[in-house]
Image (cartoon, rainbow, N blue to C red; front, side, top):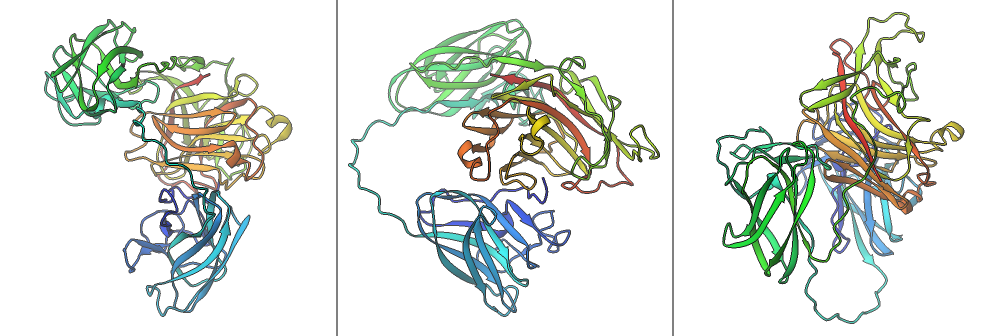
Length: 563
C-alpha cells in the first residue's frame, strides 16, 4: 500500500444541508514533494498550513499540477443534481477537477480565479448529476499555484419521493444497552487507590482485560463494594434480562438494584470460571419500570472480576458463547500450523529486512500479557554477505500458515503489542488459498492490521483485482493512547456479504461485497491463510533511522478463529 493517508474525512450524516470535506482531512493523496512544507496538522507529504479564512483551521497549499486529494465515505442518499463547491485562493489563478472513485466518474472542472493572494479566499462551484451511492470524492490539480480550504457538496434537486401515510405512533423499541464496568458514574471501593493502575485514577481497581473485545475490567472486588450507571433507559414497563460478564477462580455473588438501593432487582451467582481472565456471562431476570434509572451492581462476596453489564428485552434469544474453532496460544512454536517465511529483501515494497529461518522468532513469557507470547524481532546487523546472498543489513521474523491452516468466514483475531519507530511496519494479514495459482492481487489480500512508523494509527484494507496497491478499500483508526504501551485485540468479522474491522471493541471500518465490486472482483468467498511479519523500511514507512535503529519487537499473545 503506498501514498496512503492515515485519517478519515469528517462527514455530516446526510446531504439535507451539505457535506463538507476539510482539505486537511483527506483519506488518500498524491504529492510530488517529500515532507509537509507548511509544517502543520499532519506529518506526511501533503503541505498544510494555518488558514486565514472564515472559520479558521487549516488549508492545503503548495499544490502542483498532478497532485490530488481523495475523501472516502462520500454518501449520496438520492440520485439527483448536486452543487460541488471549493473554497480556493490563488495569486494567479488555476484549474482543478473533481471526480468520484479515482477518476472513474468525472464531475467536471472548476476554474480558480486570481484572488490576489494566497489567503484571499473565494468559493467556486459547478453542478453535476450524481447517482445514489457511496464514493471516494477526488480533487485533482490540473495546474499549479492554488490553495484549497474545503470542498462542499449540496443537493440542488432530487426526485420527489412518493408520499407515504403517516404511521400510527408506537412505543419506540427497546435497544439493548451495554455498560462497560470501567465507565461507571458512581462507585464505592473499600481500599485506597487503583490496584490495577489502568484507565482511571480513583479508588476503583481496573486492569486490562483479555476477554473478547478486550478493553478493561474491574477487579479486586470485596464485599460491599459497588458500581452504578446512571443512563439505563427503559421505554416501557416489562420483563428484562440483566447480563453480567464475569470471571472468578472460585466463584462469588452479586446483587442488582435501581437508585443505589431504592429498588432491589435480585442476585446472581458467579460461577468458578477457573481463572481471573476466563470469562462467562450470567443472567438475571428482572421487572423494570419505564424511565431512566441508575443501575447498581453490589458485591455480596469477594473474589471476582466484572467486564460489562448488559440489559436486553426479555424474549430475546441470548447469543451463544463464541465458539473457538481454532486457536494458537503460542505456548510453543507449532510446526503443524506455522512455517518460517524465509526470504530476501524487497517483497514488492522495497523493504530492507531479510526474513530468517526462525532466528528472529522466539517464544517467551511476557508478564504484561500474563502468558507465553511469540516474538518477531527486527534487528540491524553488521552487514556483509549473509545466508540468502547480498548484504543482510536488517533481519526480521515472518511466519505463515500456508498449506496448514486456512479459514473462510468468521471472526479472526490476534492479541498483539506493536513497536513504534521510524521505518517499522508490523502486519497481521491473510492471503487466499488460490495465491499459488492466481498470484497477487488476483487471489486477494485481507489486511487485518497494519501500522507504520511512530504514529498511533491502525489500518485495515483489502487488495484484489482492480483495487490493489493504493487501494480505495481501506479504513483507519487513530488511537488516543500510545499503541506500543500494551496489548490490543485486532480482528475482522467476515462473511459472504462483507468484512468489518475491529481494534478491541471498536468497529473502525466496514465494507460490503457490493461496495468492493464497484472497484473490482470480490474474491473473499474462499479460505485464506494467516501471515504475521515485522518489516523494516519500504514504500509506505520509508527509511528507518539507520544511525539510531534499535532492535524492535512485535509480540503475539494469541490468534483465534471463531466460527
